Length: 323
Image 1 (spheres, rainbow, N blue to C red):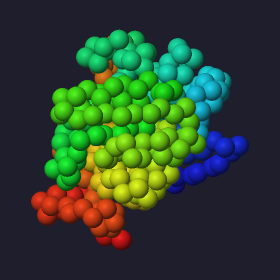
Image 2 (tube, rainbow, N blue to C red):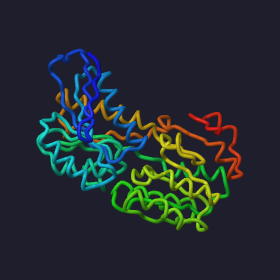
Image 3 (cartoon, rainbow, N blue to C red):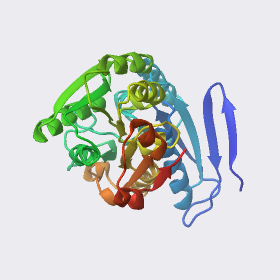
Image 4 (spheres, helix red, strand yellow):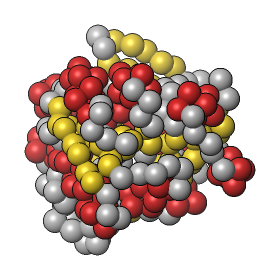
């Protein structure tokens, strides 16, 4: 059977026909995916979920909705999903996962790529399961990322723009602050309420910081272009934790998880649930292995900043951008 893509009223419906072992052609699953905002990292998570479900042999219809970075829209999507006769729902991004958990009680809720499911109120523990909900979390090695940046420059002060409306983003900002303290670095931050404020917030950091660290904050990453252009104009290096966005947006370096792989890991947990495993026995799937991280280096940005990248990093990089 062929994959068919239909676009209806802003919704993306993907019908993937897959006849796998133990799966009947007429037993089509209906799975809702609610994504916080469109940017390469979260897009890769959603795509990884759909592709891995295909590899696992499922016949599935994916009803995809994007809340465009708006928490109220995420709640509306959750309400919509309640009426769509779905078998499972997936929240890609913290506000969307929160909305799904709050609204949907009768089918499995899966969260994907959530930095801190506990502070987000999704689960009480990372190491114990909970009825009705499970998913994946990425534990970004912020200290190691900053140590990497310290090998590239004389770093004293780190700046960060973060979303004040996203529990995971605030958690990551706090973890960045703690990492800076441990490394005897000064930490300067500013918060935003939406992506349109990111560029102006970045401007307030100029002249005050040596470099900017960008976490896997969906609001900020979706506006990475404005942040990076402002920083580059002021000769301030940017280190991002999102390699996906760095392929198109000029930052000095990006070192972080492969988001497509996180989507695949999420699909494996969905498979367990669909095969009957009790979600109360399924703790959060934590992705923390550095071997699943990609390094992107932008030599053109390094030249503009007058910085040299050691050959050992170039040799290890997943992608080296030269122009």
